[in-house]
Length: 208
Length: 226
Image (cartoon, rainbow over all chains, first blue to last red; front, side, top):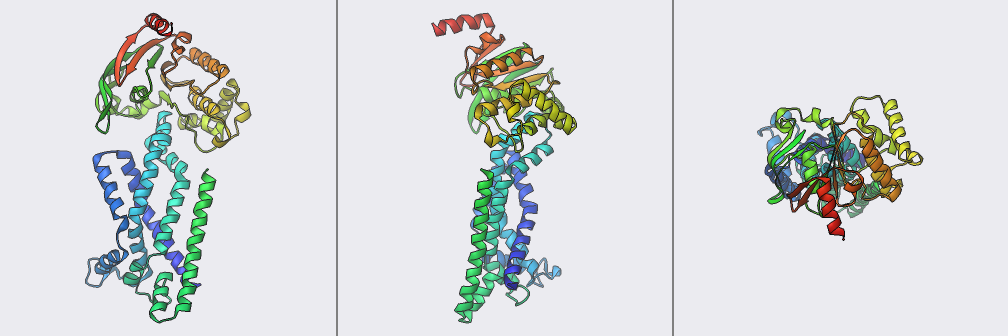
């Protein structure tokens, strides 16, 4: 239970952190409609498939005591996993929300501008109108974050009671030959993912 | 007065509007053309929703995209999309929105929204949401959202009667006739200028092919029909 709650808390925090920079960025890119913005979106789209171990490796190098961010003392803490997972889902968030905002600019945003709104109000109304789609994206990236192993293992260290999450606990159980625990934890992970999938479905029904 | 000087608009590398120059000074101006002739893009350029790729759109001699008066000018013009776009909330919320954006208190805005909806016989749907109304009703609501404003200098209407039945079409035309705002109407409805007189701009493949009076239009229209 402890591991499940920690996994949810860490991945939820990672989603919130990633939202802080991803949503404003994709809003800005969707507004500019220049070649530069198209290039930025392409870069983020191609980063969607970046291996989690690579992010873990880069982050652990940065956070290690001799690394550029070593002074923060974040390595092997839940915060390191949060940052890593936030980096992992950023390309997903930016590219998926960009598509939503790009389409909404031709409809809701344009409509609100055409009846006298300023840009800030138009952005806020567009965000309100696209909220169900954005929530679906947030749930999807949450499931991506909670299901990853590489980052949690490399920068979290799988410390029991501190940084152990569902995926690292499964890996640890398998390495010890404790397949019963591994299947049990795997079942919980699947349950979390299925719950997210159901929420996505409900949100889509609500939207329609 | 709105003036377009050699206005071009490109979508990617394809020109949608090709060097159009014109002046809008009549009370009603029609932009008539076939599907994909560039009517909607031209209206969006005139109504300052999109900037031209090349050329200038001038309001009283000034280019709003450069003069810094864009947001202020947008408060004096409104554009109604061909395909009605309604926001979350009720029909009244939708119609009251432009008033609220102009700083009018919510209660007063809702009251004025109800008045205009009543005028178009839509009082029975004022508390309904977008998913619960027909496309014709949605078009009327979308028109009411602009008709509720009485401080506009220009209204741009893109196919305003395309989804309406005869009765509602008549209501809309009557309302437009009474409204003391300059109107620019894009339409494929060749009969509309005969019911609501105005100057006619003929557009084809992004080019202006004619800028004619109603009399000339009537002659061409009749020869086209018969």
